[in-house]
Length: 165
Image (tube, rainbow, N blue to C red; front, side, top):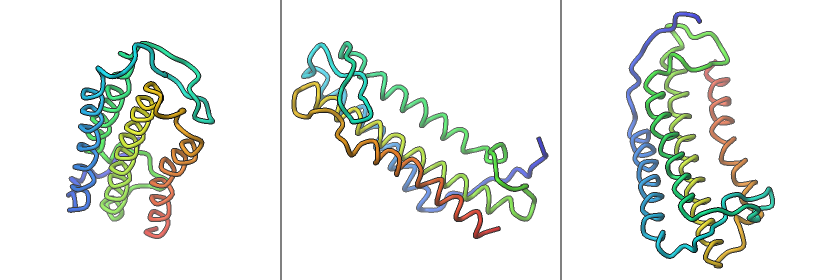
């Protein structure tokens, strides 16, 4: 691996807002489960097919798997974001372009983290709604939403990268 400059990236006000929003959504995810756990039936949906219909079921305690995974991902990506010099980039990183590339990639990572916890929150909410009979699965809109939200930060990143190049 090439030797890349190590630069501390200062967070902008928007970066701080996005980070705070992610932590708040994650806290809301945990709170939603803790406040509604007693009302869940003993068996809940644990998997949904591509059309958003529940196709596997398990114990209601499995609902805790989602916020655990979301928390590990969010915390891990937050820690990883402190070391942008180890990221993969579509171009050679030099002293001249490092600040711009690192800033762009750390901002993308912030949005990806926010999207992940947001999607996990929707899944938990719709799982609880389905389990209690208030909904009939995730809905046909869920898969397209995931694709758009998951790909948007990468498309924006690549556009910014090629404009800066």
